[in-house]
Length: 540
Image (tube, rainbow, N blue to C red; front, side, top):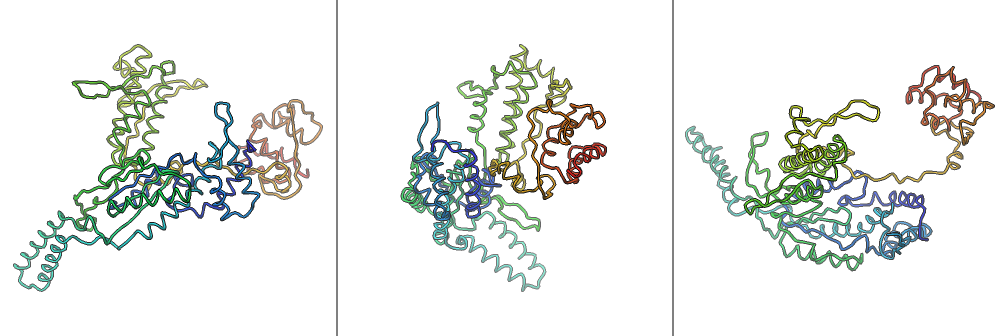
């Protein structure tokens, strides 16, 4: 079976997802409902606090090396229907076409297959559960122990507090309060906990598809052992290889790369005041998400929006025109740049330094657009700005297909760093196509239920090839002719009942009067039109 019907793939995907989705670990973020790379980064920022080491995981050719036998064995743990498992195997072995050449798939999931993402998650769920068990055994202690210097100063401060409570002399009280304040200020500049504590260890883990990141609190030797254990598990249990060159162990003060972001741990000893007035080192150990200069440069180069020049032996960036766009309309050129600019900002909007690099990116994209327009009209950038600049905005007027005057404005929404409270909206989630199996028309008619109003009873299906060839010999034909404004009878009803959406809705509803109440709200059908249409359906 080389080619599987899409319906079977959709149906199998729905069944498998319904069985497994609730059993996946929370550390998996790829191809799940309400999950995305932003939610993975959110978990890193929320749970990796205090991390000393990062392990950047890289699986060699994951989707090309999934073992079919292991896949089926994993599915068999929860699915006992052998016929369904044979269907899955046939899907895995279906093969694919590349450059008009058929290729077998003996050890991979079909590229572009609707069921491939969920199968990949099922395959790596074994790894997720292994890491969870590994972390439970690895973690140790309730917290880091205090440093000797901090403990000594804290004991001195507490002794002064006890003296203050027992002191009755006001002058002595003022003196003790001054010493306590000095001691508290001194303690803010002293590390409170031990950076290396053998009695405290933690392991955190996040995965998106075949990319994963591990954060560890412990020694580098322990991280090396974790990497070796992961390599062994992948090889023995899942027949996968971990790239030893790309699976890096990085000190948390240096940036680790995950999904285009640079991630590191702050070591700042700066302190702030809480609402209650207490001083805290709020940034110490927190996770920083950054967009790098190299990332911005690569994105600009991919758009051909920048040139690299040498000035006094120093690399300098210069906006450049995109000559392949000069044949487009001015408004379309601005719209294309806006799309690219918004795409960059939407993805990197949670980076802590997006405010700086966002405006840098905006500058080069804006002047690249102006140079492109100048190249098209053989004008300078100043002349283009004089033509289209309105205050601080660049506005290009145009006319739509109906001849209406409209305008397009250069993006002016700013580049504020978005906090994670707002990433739960639908537009921040990965789009997962609706793979719900649609029943056939026969199956729908057998339900004897109106799909519009819910009324039960016998349904009648009328199939019409050419509406313009209908004759007004039945009630149904009269209604169809009337709706489509193809018969003199339509003049008594009106000329605005010719939408295909209304026809489709009427098609499956013959009895219930309530259907017209719904359609009236949805399509703004008049009371007169509803009454006349009711006459055709009453007692039908």
